[in-house]
Structures are given as structure tokens and as C-alpha cells.
Length: 160
Length: 159
Image (cartoon, rainbow over all chains, first blue to last red; front, side, top):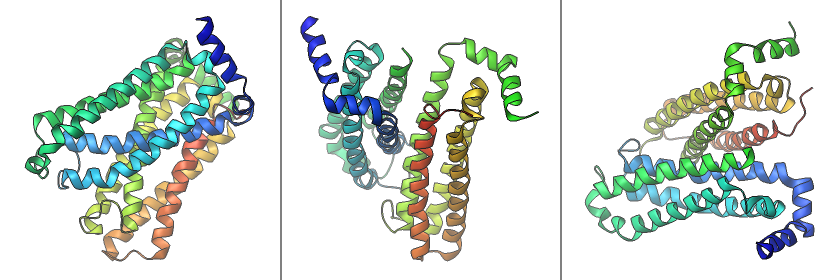
């Protein structure tokens, strides 16, 4: 523990971390909300299409082609702003349960996405227009739940 | 009754008290609020891009625009309900907060422009002009401003 607390302490005391925590935090946090809204919002549009709830008249591959560049761009922004918030209070985050759970959920969301991309999506030609196959619907449902939980635990970081 | 008296009265109502003493209530409502704003923000972006002839542009604008507008309005209702609950829970934090008022003014303008663009899209079919594209981009700036002001309610002092 001594080792892990020392690297977070070192990180938190770097000039950048001090500047973020003293002067920039509300701006960085607000930018993080904008980016996360774009990440989660575009993912929700894809997930609800997989579940057959929205955009039923759009080909799935067309929808995902048009949305995912925004998702990834915003994800980079969310990662940068998230990292900035982390270094500003590193010692608190490493012992913050909602933060650790959120990171775990992000990993699960990534695994779900990779499995969908490299396994389920290969047969997209068969279900691009109509109702997606069960595996695709399951991926959409899992993603929807995981991202809602990511937002939930993310918000809870500030309440413990 | 001025705003401070109204705020005190509201925070003493049984409903406000019930939210205040339930420790998980405020963060839970905030989470619902953020989930809805994420969906709204992405939908608004798709609408603005569509006005500019980009994004999801597989169908005629006059067909797509009302769909986007309906989704934005439904999500706005969810946001107003969850937002009202948050105000009821902590009136002293919001009702007298300049950031909250800036947010509400921008929200009114964003919704007005969205409705205007929807009606233009219906009438003018496939020909949004430069002014419409500019308005569509401006709405996105307003939504970003609304998110910033929403978060800044936690940092700006109430008067």
C-alpha cells in the first residue's frame, strides 16, 4: 500500500495536478460531462437500434458507420478530461469504490463491444435491414445497461 | 413571497424533506438526468448534422426532422421532470443560482430554435440555407453551454 499511495501522492502533487485541482476542476468536469454525453448518447442510439426500438428504417451498418466516429472522438475527450480529474485527486480515487467499479464496468463494456465487433457483426449482412439476431440484441441490451451503470457509478464518485 | 421565502417553503415541504433524508435519492435523480441528457445531446447532434446534410442523411429531411424533434421533446420532458425533482430537493442550491438561470435561458432558446428548424424542415423540404445550418450549429453550442451551466450550479454561489 505504501508504494501505491506514494505514486498517487507524487502524481497529485505535480504542478499540473495542483493547477487542475485549484483552478480548472469545474471546467474539466463540465467538459467531461459533455464528452460522456456524446459517448453514451451515441452508444444509446446504436444499442436501441440493435434492440429494434429506434431507427428501424436505417440499416444498422449505416447507423453505426455514421455514429461511431463521434463516439470514439468523444471517448478520447472523456479519457483526457477523466485522466485530468484523476491526477488532480489521485490518492482519493484509488480508494474510491464507485471509481474502481466504474473502471471495471468500462472494461466489461469494451469486452462486450469487441465480442460484438469481431463475432456478431460478421454476419451483419443477414440482419442489417431487419430485426437484429438474438446475439446482436443481447449485445445492445448489455451495452445499454453497462453504460447506464458507468454513468451511475461515475456520478457516485463525488458522493462518497 | 420572494424567491428566498419560496425556496425555504419548498425545502420544508414533506416531499422535499423526503428526498433530502433519502441519501441515495439526489444522486439517483442526477444519474437519470445525465442519462437523458446524453440521449438528448446525441439526438440533437444528429438533427443538427442532418440540417447540414451530414450524419444520418438517408431519408428526406422533412421525414427525418419531426422524428428527431419528437425524440428531443420527449427527452426534454424527462429532463424537466428529473430537474424539477432536483430543485425540489435542494431549492436553496438552485432557485437563487445565477448558473441555473443562465441554463434555463439557454434551454428556452435551444428549444425555440429546434422547433423553428423543425417547421422549416417540414416546409422547405430539402433546402436548408446557410442561416439554418448556422442555427443548427448554434443550438449545439447552446446544449454544450447548458451542460456547463448545469454542472456549474455546484460551483457558483447562490445569492
